[in-house]
Image (cartoon, rainbow, N blue to C red; front, side, top):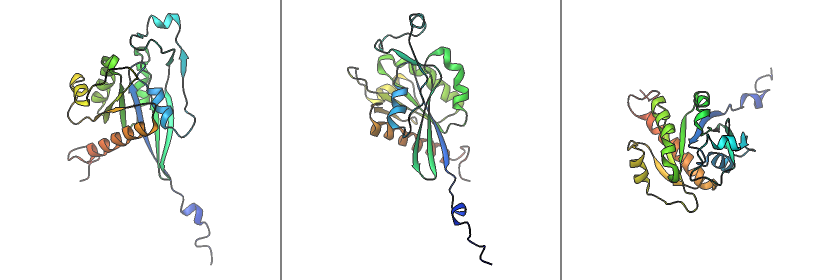
Length: 203
């Protein structure tokens, strides 16, 4: 007698749901900055300084001030509730590191393609990849100081995106702006899963 309820803490423990989100995009688009802006922990970065030899490989037109590059990934974490944790993985943007994308994308619930209007064509590899993988994604246009700004619909047209794909302007340096991007992505992913015929849709 008296054993019932002897371990209330263990009985009430909540195992959090982990949501994995990728932050992708071209070289210098602001992926490391976005992860650093929203993470609640010290971000894991794998940046290395650009060298004279890498300058021959990494095209820096439009981002000449950039002195470092991500060679593996960026990592951050956001706790939404006790039972919901978001893990952010920033992908490397250079072509020579694209072989890592499959590993980083495994199990991802969605992806943000961070776009730079100064080098908009750099967004195509990420867009193509997530379309082919069937991963829910959105495009967030990082508004760099001094860069010309375009309406989201103009960017959508330039990237030949489906009307279903959300496109919004953002500032990767601002936590609130990055939060709005992530909320939009999650809502988009939920909407896709709720559509009739979608994998995981309610029956």
